Length: 151
Image (cartoon, rainbow, N blue to C red; front, top):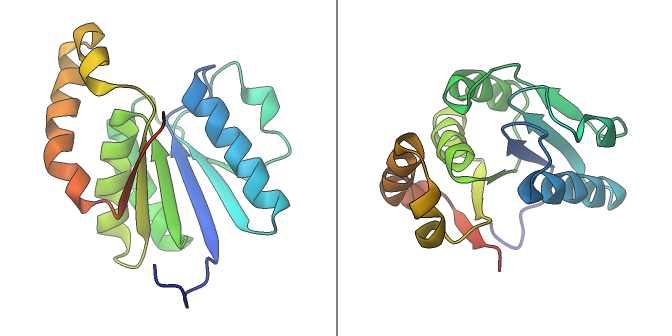
């Protein structure tokens, strides 16, 4: 995004509202962007989790899907109908879905994926599915406009 372009809207995508650190960070970012006067939308894959009561004051759009892979097509449709300037995502499987959906929805959307854990350390605890996602991300991350490593 060049200096002369304005940010019209930011969308943040997370799979659910379980009590993990990434979910809490994205709720806080949504609140901060909103207080700063930026139009912001928190897109949540599944309407569940212990943080549900913390988003009642936020602009939240639920995709109502049980898995992140099921979120890709509804996310594409949402991004096409209500395109943001920037799409942020967190967690490996959500990053994969967001990059695919963002690229297919609208080439103007800037995609920012965030990594909230050390993938090499976490790899030993990952399931086979999560390991597959991690390997796939090596090929998909170059299609994001930015990658943020939370330290």
